[in-house]
Length: 330
Ligand code: UDP
Ligand code: MG
Image 1 (cartoon, rainbow, N blue to C red):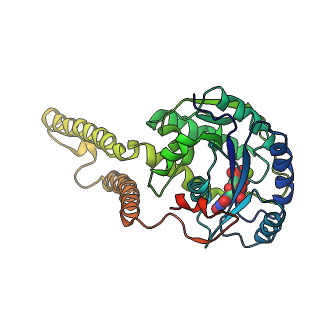
Image 2 (image 1 turned 135 degrees about the horizontal axis):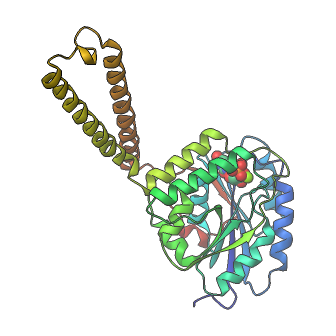
Image 3 (image 1 turned 180 degrees about the vertical axis):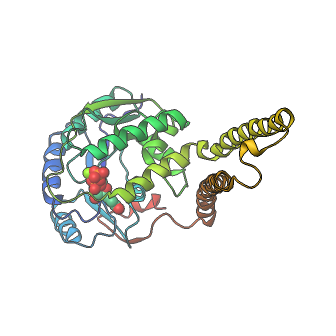
């Protein structure tokens, strides 16, 4: 295994309007990093995802008195997954830890991630022991989502993992070669392969501030996960088509059978009646077709988005980096 004698550790932290927890987060993270032995150094790389509150002011303050702090500032809000990507693009560590700023990913877990890394694992993800700290709605939807992904996704996503994880430099380099825009990072870090393992931790409650993942963003992330790793929704058309065809065939047989054996079709409500059943059939089929079309549109839209090849993010500025660090800019 190739863990250096005295490795360098990067911690990547996306922040979006986190003025309420940022000082506390930094304090706790700093305390943990200070205790770590056998490292050649650490960096804390904050990615300011277009915050509009005092996050920038707090980061400037941290930059002033901690030389290991670095900041990438986006020109606007690009979203959590893109902020993580920018952090991974710029992190120079032999190991890179990715975590949220809201203390739901406790910094105290980092030494355990490092232990596993030293044991030879290249991806060490943190698994939530319990979701007691999450509201019931989040618990149920998360369970449904992970269940669905395990069924239809072509990756085996471990249950109850977030993006909190440690990545070996090799994994980070592999990750940088992925160009897709709609990214589902916990899936992609699995997809790249390597030796992976998990450590359990109790998920804490957010001590201050509110979630930056409202329902809309959560649904988008889930949908990105599904579409990135599964064609199952596209195949729905085939299954629905088959079911409808079989049903219509049976119904046709029923109509012919009625005609021959009873010599009339009044039995079925034809031809003067039957407006209701006809409308139901028409509307049902129109609905199914629109849903399937919409699903195809989703994939088509994503394909279009990828084809445009716009940069994933735009930086307003980079603060605290050495000249030497600029090499892996994307
Ligand atoms: N975040 C971000 N950009 C966004 C939304 C969130 O950088 O558009 C950051 C946020 O500051 C936090 C992390 O992503 O550090 C996770 O967000 P949050 O804790 O609000 O999500 P939850 O834990 O509620 O799912
Ligand atoms: Mg959180």
